[in-house]
Length: 389
Image (tube, rainbow, N blue to C red; front, side):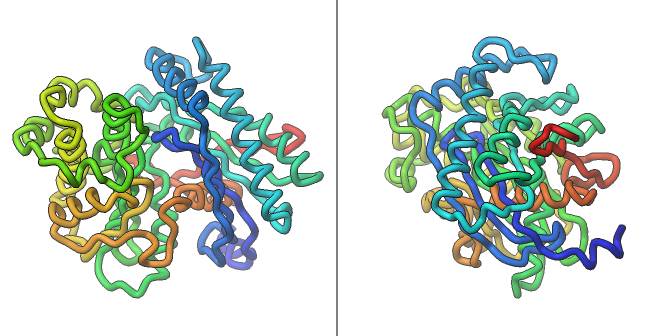
């Protein structure tokens, strides 16, 4: 197998990502053999409308009592159909703009995580893979690309955390940089996670704590706006350091990698301990941004060596207030993905294109040092347009 892989050429792969911030569908194309990235293709984000976001938010609530990952109680069934339709529409728009990429070989479909409880060996990503595979055949013409979906389930079933899965892609990207010394890659989505990379050693990774999810929910409740755009509210506020100290007392922050979180894992903890009701909108936004920075800093003592720099991607990379707080609490330069030639907005979607190619070729997508799985493990369900597995 290894000898065969060395001779395999790079193929076009598309990744689809709908993150915990519930902002839309990211579509990104790369050319890859599952080991290296030969070229970056176009990437686009297709936003959800207010009704979509409201339905997905209700699905998150209805999923809280799930014990069976195949069950779709409440609005979950409706949300799954809507989500799949929005992904197909996003692909249709992408191919209309870039018809030269209809010859894509494989598509990685993350779906929408609505529940993540690895301690119960349970993770749920809604999204109908076979239906999307059939839609792809219509969009591209037969035979259509192979679709790889449900990429977290095998890891969790084997006792892993199921997240983060992106580190092996971060490793491929960092190998293309001239930087010497360890590098920390930050993904600032609804949840924050890190990848620690030092040469050819297996990546070390974990979720660190809340990122945009709590800030977005807070801003939505206070102002009706779904985000703190450009970190403007946080920049005008003052951090309640006493609240940060109370919040950092959570036992999760003392646990070494690997570890992972559900989007809403800290909602009740923050509601009980942050005292946000007594803070202005600006001070509350500043305090929640500082909490994200503090949780990332808390992982540094658990790493083999101090990183030389950090590279930030995800929606939080557009928040200069958050980036400044991270640089101050980490005590190192923090660059955006764009500053090193990557894309903050499409990096995670690119990663699922890369993971889909690795899964298709039987390569591991998770490791003991990233998810705690007992051994390097591949994953994903391979669905062809005919429905054959």
